[in-house]
Structure formats: C-alpha cells, structure tokens
Image (cartoon, rainbow, N blue to C red):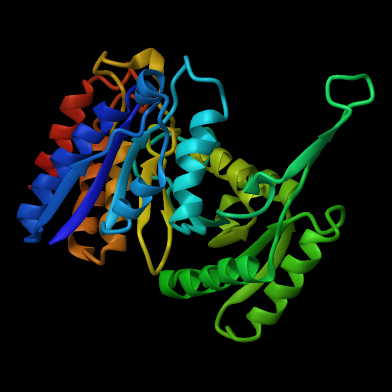
Amino acid sequence: MYKIAVIPGDGTGPEVIREGLKVLKAVSRIANFEYQTKLFDFSGGRYLKTGKLLEDKDIEELKKYSAIYLGAVGHPDVKPGILEQGVLLKLRFSLDQYINLRPVKLYPGVQTPLKNKTPEDIDFVVVRENSEGLYSGKGSFSNKGTKDETAIQESINTRKGVERCIRYGFEFCRQRNKRKKLTLCGKTNVLTYAWDLWQRTFDEIAKEYADIKTDYSHVDAVCMWFIKSPEWFDVIVTDNMFGDIITDLGAMIQGGMGIAAGGNINPDGVSMFEPIGGSAPKYTGKNVINPLAAISALQMLLDFLNEKKAARLVEEGVIHTAQKLKSLSAGKMGYSTQEVGDLVVEAME
C-alpha cells in the first residue's frame, strides 16, 4: 500500500494532476497494486489567504509518505522568491532530495526543433545536484541601496554533497545500461574552487567504476552539443545552477515543456515528482493545458517505487498519445486536457 502525498498547487497544476491521478487509478488496477492519496494545499493561493507557507509540522507529516506528486507552485500575485524559497526549496532541502533527475527523451511522433534528429539521437538523463551550490541561499549585501552597493551570492559545495551526487550519477549510468558514459558538466577554467572539488571527486570515484566511460565538458560546450550532437550524451552529472539551465534546454529539444518531467530524489527517503513547465496561470481553468508532462512525472514516481510494469505501461500510454496530438502546446493539441488523460488510459488498457 503506497501512500502518495499530492500537492496540486497553483494555476494549471490541479488540472494536470487530476489527469495524472486518473492514469494512476487505471494503472493500479491493470498492474495490480494499491495506493492511498492525500491532498496538501501548499500553494500561492493559500499563502495569499493565510500567509502560511510550508511549516515544520508539514515536513514531518510528509516524511510518512512513499512519494510526493506535485503539480506546480507559482502565483502571479505572490512576489518572486517567496514560494520558491518557502515551499519548493524547503521541500527539497528538508527532505534531503539531493538529486534532481531529468530525463531528456524524444518520443516517436513528437517534433523537435533540431533538424534531422530522431528519438535514437535524443535520449539522455541529467543528474543535477539539488541541495547546494548557488541555490543554498547564502550571500550578503554591503552598502545596500547606495551607488557603492555590492551583492555577494555564494556557491556552497561540500565534499559530502558533491560526492553523493557524483556517485548517484555513476550508479544511475550503470543501471541505465545504455552507452554507459558519464559526462561531468562544469566550468573548471573559471570557477576554480568549486569545480576543482567537483573534478577531483569525479576522477576519484571514477576509479571505482571501470565499466563506465567518463568525460568532461564545459557547460557552454554542453549547450552547443545538445543542439548539434545530442546523441553524444548518455548521463550527465552537474551542479545545481548548471543543471537548472541545461535541463530547460533539454526540455526544448525533446519537444517542449508539455512533455518534460523531473524528479527530486532522496534515494533513501521521500522523493517528489513533477512536470517542469510551471503553473501557466494564463491557461488556468481553460482545459487546454497539456497533462503529458505530469503523467510522465507519474511514470517516474512509479519507477521510483519499483512498480516497473506500471511505469512501463504509463510511458507506453504517453508515447501512444503524443503521436495523436497536433501539438504539445497548450490550446493547440486538438484535444482538451481531460481528453488527453482519457487517451493515455485507453492506450494502457
């Protein structure tokens, strides 16, 4: 019996989560497993009404769940940074979700902006460190508000944090068992402190994985090769900031935000899975948003729970459905949000 915490969130989040839960209900029957869900309102709408964000007691309750299924958090009437720090980052940090896992996979029938590239060319995974770096929230101002103001944003990288991320990358690459190649993405020529630590740790751990080929590429070069030769990549491991940037580029080459999902992983604890497209408030309530990214996030959640048959069925349902849509973009699919969810269920059945 899996206990799944559901955070529908803001904007179109509740709409795509509704379709994901529809798929979950169907696949649990087909693959024969049981689950329970509980809804949690950690949204911008709730914050505007009550002033409350994520509290310590909420974290303690969430620790009792098998996984978290997140729609989106983001409200146009809430100042940027409040929800990100008070909900999303607090969830990741408090639950020690130290890996952000982002598959970049082009499905058959889905258009990519890259000329002459096929699903065989675009199939890799980014392993992003998710709890340190520039996102640790450390820094300071001096002379704030004056012409001599200085703002310092600190990138915090610990040996423990770097090592566990890199080791996860090697293990994931071995388990994935495709090209068995792990690329370290960094900026060793300029960021000489943090990336000296990353490179040394990477080289040391690589000695334990003789079956995995390794290489290194600067982050700017990775962006270029994503466009020119995405087939070069298998698994990429990188820090928090660079991972945030290159995974959005990855989403575009796999067909757009309408298909892109990600996981915030604690291998030994509670992990959280979500579509990465955000709350898209302008489409709220119109029944036109694409739910396939949220359904793909559900597929990742099931895979994490080791429900491999169910995960495979959901992915096959997404692949089948994606080929029927006129576009992955909101309002251009040729189907409503609800109808796309129905198509995935029909395909699985």
